[in-house]
Length: 67
Image (cartoon, rainbow, N blue to C red; front, top):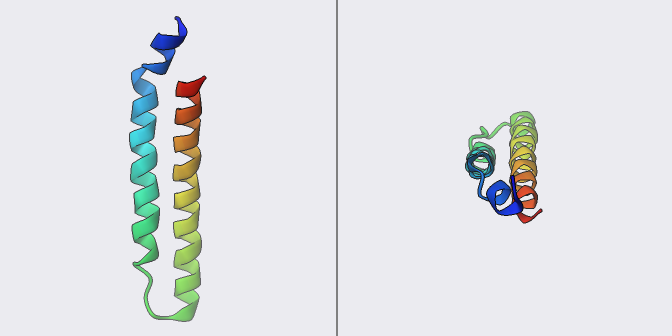
């Protein structure tokens, strides 16, 4: 498989869509926190983890396309 076919592979774009969904879920989850201070910290940690996973997936897909 040549480089153009690898860059245009469907799995890269599916991975980008998945990364966007996970990242947006992380952003929206941050605003789901109740007013209690302990829960806010817990929800922020969960939201940050989802957001970082989304960033990692997107970077993996983009660098695979650019390679």
